[in-house]
Amino acid sequence: MDPIALDLDVMAAHVLGLAAENPQRRASQRIDLGHQQLRMTAIGFDTGGELPEHKNPGEAVLQVLRGRIRLSEAGRAIEVAAGTVARIPDGVHSVEALEPSVILLTALPLPGRHEH
Image (cartoon, rainbow, N blue to C red):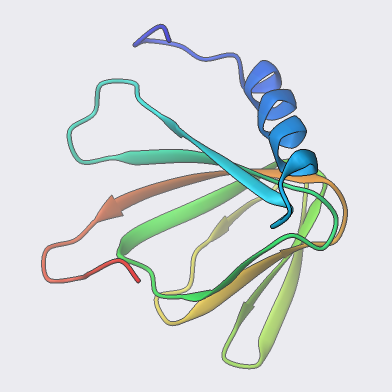
């Protein structure tokens, strides 16, 4: 991968294909552009694929590149469609694909927080 740029359309098509073949209906690809702390991960989902409840290890946002997802936290849920960016809640949260979807997760881990 070029350490300076990445074609998001090509990457999105790739992870969507992987997700469609995976029994869990999701697939991910870490994006390495040479950052030491900043983490970027593309996650593809087939319809109904999900990231079950988990904690946020730091500051994070997700951008929906394709499709539509449901982001849930503490009994509250919002639908996020392609072309939209959303802040990841600090608490326990989950993601569910309402249709074939790709999200780009960008996170900056904070000291003292652990991934779950």
